[in-house]
Length: 74
Image (cartoon, rainbow, N blue to C red):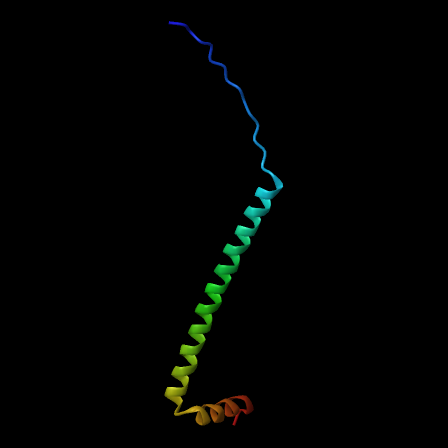
């Protein structure tokens, strides 16, 4: 059997500009989707609150009257 010398070579890897830009665009996509998800959750909550106010107050006209009474203080 012939013994072979094992040598360790260190290779330095460098990220290319294309790879860095690709990571940045992926992070922007994650941020965009996260923001859109929270905005849709808040918008849905707002619609639920508005519809419950309409049902509880007696209709849209009564709700508008109540709004003006609350603003004017009468």
